[in-house]
Amino acid sequence: DSEVVQMVVNMYHGGPEACGAFTTGGTESILMAMKAYRDWGYAEKGITDPNIVVCHTAHAAFDKAGKYFKIFVKHARTDKKMQVDVRHMRGLIDRNTVAIVGSCCQYAHGSIDPIEELAQIALKRRIGLHVDCCLGGFLVPFMDKAGFPLRPFDFRVKGVTSISCDPHKYGFAPKGSSVVMFSSKELRHHMYCHLTNWTGGIYATQTMTGSRAGGPVAATWASMCKFGESGYVETTRKIVSATREIAQGIQEIPELEIVGDPVVCVVAFAGRRRSGVNCYALA
Image (cartoon, rainbow, N blue to C red; front, side):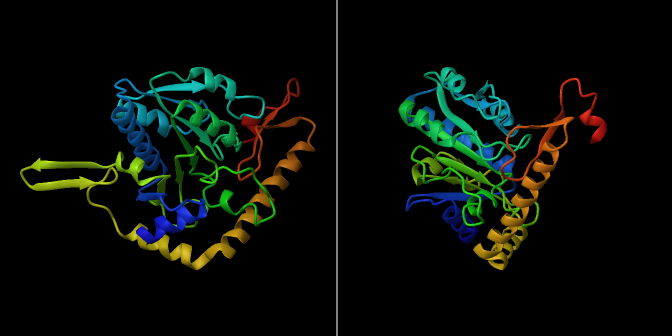
């Protein structure tokens, strides 16, 4: 467990204080990060009515976290590339905001939010910034070495305070494996749940579950050791190349247009206005 977490932290350029936890999937990783921000906001700022600001393209798990933990979720609009409208997101932040969220990449269109700009906002407002890398978590860390350079999006960016990443997608681990990372042990502490006055003794967990299956952890460790950095660089090269080849092909069809910015592993398209093409019929 700890070796998997540390390997993933290293992939995302975590510093000496960076840490994390193994979870059962991207949803749980997101839930735990939001729980940490809620408790951090109360402990450090006395916030009793917390909110987070996400793009409306962010994963549904952020809204789920809002329902589970009584966090109000504000939704920022997108720009023409289906990236978050940074100006709108900035305007939605208030004194009860505990964190903002960026995706790298987001599920529906494959676009990457401008993480560096979001980090500047988070630093200025003294709030958290969670980067959701669940979908492309084992692609984006290797894109530079695969020949597809990206702007920094991970712990290299000052202001990024947590990241979610799923080995069970392009890390080729079995379903039920994800890692949530934090820039500091202090922030991770707010994720924990511990009860000391239970009649059965001390009850403490770092994530949602009490009992946890060891199989997915061991299989994830085996997959990562099998592929190694060179293996993931090669799979990234193939997957991203295929994505861009598909996108290029769509762009050459006059009746179709790309929706978003397909730089990683998702290609979204639609029929051009008055083209008579129904993209749902194509699907």
